[in-house]
Length: 369
Image (cartoon, rainbow, N blue to C red; front, side, top):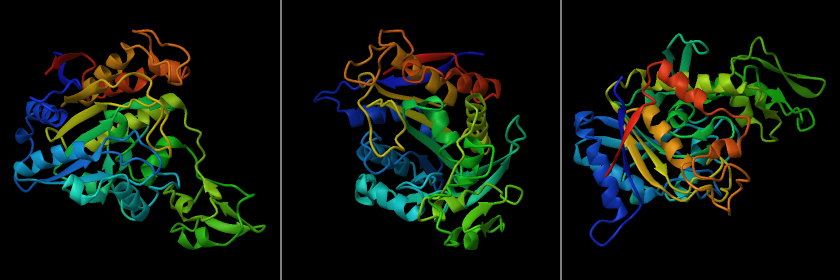
């Protein structure tokens, strides 16, 4: 198989060409007009950042992408799905409020925001893939129904997958709440008995009648539970939580299988960008962002989701680890920065498995603009 092309622009700018103009040049090389038609509904999948986080991609970068898509006669919208945990993006109302607070207002990005899995994460489309771990994947309905998908990912470290790039932005980020629970856990949510006050809210909201009050505490019947995770969000006392028991290799494989499901109906109608800027050690889902582990590098673009993540990881690992970061080892050029962050996580699993499933190619040609 011939190497896939990955395009890259660094962050150097001048009076002749600013960074926004360089981003547009990168987008033009992607040839989006070959996959976007007039009146297409174009989902721009991104992460709006948790409240208190500052590492997410700046809204004015998204404006350049939105404006270019509008020039092609299509209708773009920014999108994400609600989180599995009960943070500031756990339902569509607080999610939209957080996104606006982080700068993603219509006046800035020139496009609406649509949370793809509904008010509480229950709006999904089941995509049949019949893979090793996932037979049917539950994808945010509005993403599944879009004509074109553009992934715009902030490349950074992640405590379960080693790093988070395009594959995580798609596989985990496009999953509805039920799909996220499938990836993170093999069992039903658990009740924290010390926090439960037996108010009965979870009982009333459970569509499967899987929750009851026993001995003045909520109890979940695993035989009835379908894993939608709505009870996690409903509980005001945070007495219901995910059982974070996912085996890391299986978690990564499930994430890749979900990526396969997301792209199943988008063959030839998807493109991917990774922003290698403020490369923080952990996910943007936290309400804070630690110091970057390496210097800011630039922006990558490709039509191959595997190649762009491989190229991004390789470029990060070629850098010198910053002394001001949390890296205590693997700081020298060529050393694996993600292993330095998470010694027990083999991040290559996701790339090897994605290549095996035919999602893309780990071999790439880096074309610097």
